[in-house]
Amino acid sequence: MDIKSFVAKRKSELSVLAKSAPLTPTLMIIQANDDPASNSYVRGKIKDGEEIGFKVLLNKLPTTVLQDELLKEVEKANLNPDIHGLIVQLPLPKQIDEKVVKLAIAPAKDVDGFHPLSPFTPCTPKGIVSYLEGEGFLFKGKNAVVLGRSDIVGKPMAKLLLSKDCNVTVLHSKTSMEDKRAYIKMADLIVVAIGRLGYLDHSFEYKPSAAIVDVGINRGEDGKLHGDAVAGLPVALQTPVPGGVGLLTRLALMDNLMEAANNELRD
Ligand code: NAD
Image: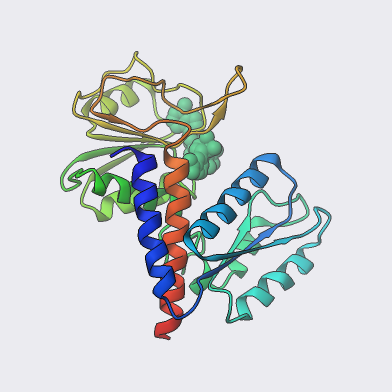
């Protein structure tokens, strides 16, 4: 199933769950930037929530907001029982320490999964694994290569694939090209998240049965969005950009919000 159909199906399932839930799962987004890409991500999250029947509240702060003021808004949302999920949209202005803010969010509401004690799986890895599961990808004993080791994608992706019993190798900016070529040639699953347009190209050798999951979002000289892999590589499955992992990430956020609201009911 293509990613758009997969996401539409899962959203309608969430919509049924939302209708029968005794409370409306509610997400608060705190945004302290005026970044065009962030504005577009925030609009996407609001639209997803509305389509499903969740409530998404936006608390937009001036970019001049001080760290203490932002932390107060986080604390208010932490204590508000009507808010089940809380995210602080990145990037944050220079005067604010991202690490301090991430740690200030109550773990039970941290639907982005960034807090070390958050019970939620970070959205990009979660969305990718649920899609591959839907495609019937069998993880156990498979060679998985993750390109990139960031805290929000590469590392949690590797951890999740390890928990699915894959043999996981993480390649990064200090890995030699010779090693990259050797690991990629052996890989059954390649997740690329490095932010380099068209990095995975026809010069690498791939298993014809491999799956390539392209996380990268890069603006090309043509003004359009492109992934970290060139389109049409000779593999069994390759996710497109746009219309690929971005949609899965948004879906996983909604899944995490439903879970957060359910957890609230159980407590
Ligand atoms: P980042 O800049 O924090 O990390 C990039 C990682 O890539 C680093 O760990 C670095 O070691 C590695 N790297 C850089 N050059 C490399 C090379 N030549 N070979 C191997 N590794 C290399 O990036 P990030 O936040 O993880 O995001 C990566 C990409 O994914 C970006 O394009 C970002 O926009 C995109 N992204 C997409 C989604 C989505 O939902 N689709 C979500 C998050 C990030």
